[in-house]
Amino acid sequence: MPPNSPDTLRRLLLLNVKYSSNLGDAVLVECLEHELEKCGFSASSFDLAGRSHNDTTSAKRKFILDTLQRLPLILRSTATYLALTYLVKTKIRPMFRGALRNCDGVVLGGGNLLSDIDLNFPSKIEAVLQEAKRVAIPVAVFGIGVSDDWSKQGERLFRSAFSGLNLVHVSVRDERSKDIWDKRLGSVAPPAIVGRDPGLLAGALWRSEVRTRRAAPVVGVSVMSPVALKYHSDTELPDNDVIRRWSVALVYALVDAGYHVNLFTNGSSEDDACLRLLAMAISGDSNIMASVTVSERPLTAERLAQLIASCDVVIANRLHSNIVAYSFGIPSVGLSWNTKLNSFMNSVGRGEYVLDTGKSSVKDVVSVTARALHDGIDLEQRGRVLDDTKNSVTLLANELRRALATPAKGPL
Image (cartoon, rainbow, N blue to C red; front, side, top):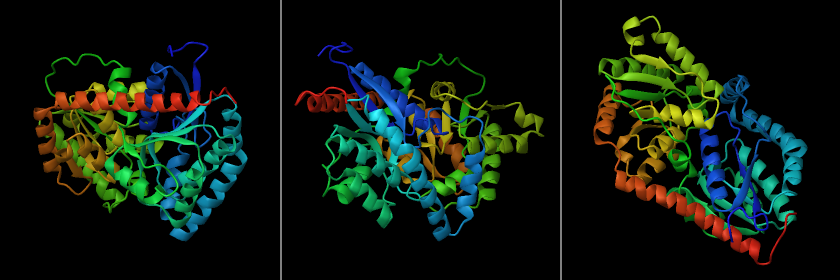
């Protein structure tokens, strides 16, 4: 089947959160779209929140997260359930029904979509996959993260979503996700295989400038809001103010150790607000500021990738800051707050470069950063990881092509 032939080109609808304010989601989606197109498909995305573009100006998300975090659990669950029910019924499901008319297959992934925070993803995924069932269209799950945080209602919704679906392929991004998928959904869906996060292809999609030799190595510090950290964390974290003071101390310690620090975010409004507060806290010290760059908020996935690619080493909470760094061959130090970060770092042999957010001493972070910079990336292993990622997408494409060929199926 020749790629991109008008007679054979099949249209795939990818289900994800491409227009999340966290550009890490856009990175993995754009990489997956591009790789599927190389395999001979036309790929476009449907954002599970019903968004059609990135919101680069609103500060509502920080306010909402902060408010939800302060509510008693029963009130938080009730408020979010009512809001989600209305959103799904009036916007998301009708939009998806319309989008299905122009596609041949559906791919759910990647990102940590099989998680249950206030029934957000269970409600949305169950609604859209009911529409996919209605028309019996082939569906694949790809490169997805699976968390073991499901409520009883969340598990009921996920089981309903995948039961009776024309599910032709299931891959998850790590062994832990496979174990949870098989345990929770194995009785209603095929067992999962382990693939790779498509964000690992960022270095192949976007070219980086050659890094010149500099007077001081550049440490990229990816800033993440304590509010977002605590809302999404699956571990106990220090108080918000403790994390903020720890972050300031880390910048000072890195500069004292002879590094130039580049502060950046993955693009979300709450992270950007936190970055500005951090910059303000150090702005009065001219000696420190001489060795600090405060990056502008990235507005595209490509710009985020370029920011990370310009660094010599990266320190980050955000999973996709670490993934993008690895894709460009740049060593990173992961600041743990969620199991998914540890799972990725272990999967590429970098578990020894993970520390605890706000708990590990600043001295230890600086020490591990120096070791990561000195050790670099195992290029042979990185080559295997990137090949595995491409092969995972090729397998997905082949499974979809097989499902669409027998029997032959035209657009709906």
